[in-house]
Length: 164
Image (tube, rainbow, N blue to C red):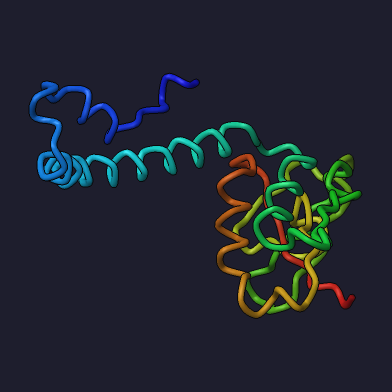
């Protein structure tokens, strides 16, 4: 028995004196207790959701588990691929005069590397979330919000749609 396990109907009946425990009074007590049961049910749902969110964090294995639990619980096809070139520090900087991104030189040859919001290319992301195309139309916005909830603030991600 948990400290959060409360039987409000039983508690309401036990608080009544024995001579008042008739069927009409029981119905009256149940009517009074029913809004408390509603609030108690909402509290227990919030508690379970909070415990679930605390249990997982931004590690790749946990993030993949959360995404598969919510979006593909049966086949579990959602994967996370880390960017192999993210540690090489090669940056692609968007030039102001052109629409196409221009690759920057290697950092050992460049004294300063500017990180702009217009960064593009395969090194612009720290990891990729690979999802099947079946989930792409309906679940993209919710998937982005779940990934943003669990990932580290400094990490950038992209969603890849895979044919399965």
